[in-house]
Image (tube, rainbow, N blue to C red; front, side, top):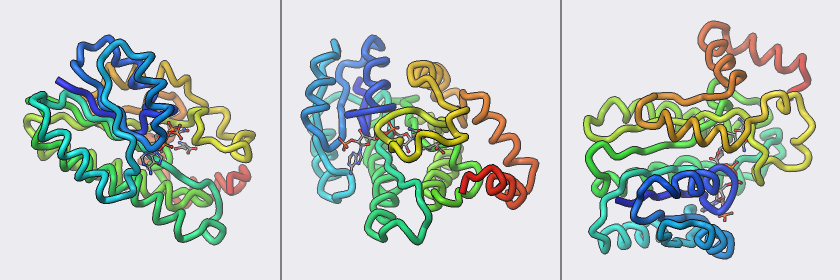
Length: 245
Ligand SMILES: NC(=O)C1=CN([C@@H]2O[C@H](COP(=O)(O)OP(=O)(O)OC[C@H]3O[C@@H](n4cnc5c(N)ncnc54)[C@H](OP(=O)(O)O)[C@@H]3O)[C@@H](O)[C@H]2O)C=CC1
Ligand SMILES: CC(=O)[C@H](N)C(=O)O
């Protein structure tokens, strides 16, 4: 049985790889562009790792992954779609190229990897998609990213209900200090909701498959609740007053 992690070269994907190291997978497949970071991770892991240094914004990467899956006799026990990008800025300031890249990675790559994996997932295998607390309400000054994560949330919840033999969960972290967070983003009110990456991943591994939405941070939980009971227009107005956009 193998585990596949996209976005394994840093941040949340990297932490997942470390924490599943003792979970009896025969192999962990590590996907991201930076081969040197993946090689470093491979050296740390006790489990045999396969490095797939690929750009998931390129179609041919998925052919390569599928070829590898065809070659192995092992089934997938766990697929973690963690690769993701996002630019925290006003829509008029981001380039179209970056906007489309966000969609390509956060949406197209995630559904491509999931679709390819379906045939190779073992009975009761798990797909864990990484969305975000930014998926709960529209995100002025983070519009494309927030919308891409709303896609991941809705898509994951929907397909979970279609499958009998595959478990799908969606993780919605609040804010995690990884390479994702740029220096300019660091000092905001969002700092109040910073997650401990180890704790986040530990909880996700415990709840994946069993729970539909996994949102361990108390602020994430609160935001999810608020997003269900208070009109989004009012929440965004409040965020404006707090200077969040
Ligand atoms: N950090 C945060 O506050 C939060 C993050 N998230 C989500 O968690 C996920 C992981 O983010 P995080 O770990 O924080 O960020 P990082 O920037 O640390 O990790 C992103 C990962 O995606 C990979 N990646 C980026 N572009 C590509 C590409 N074109 N092809 C293949 N891999 C790519 C990167 O590897 P490489 O550069 O080597 O290709 C890296 O491994 C993302 O989906 C993010 O949206 C959700 C909520 C909060
Ligand atoms: C980067 C994230 O996804 C985070 N939840 C945020 O909204 O800052």
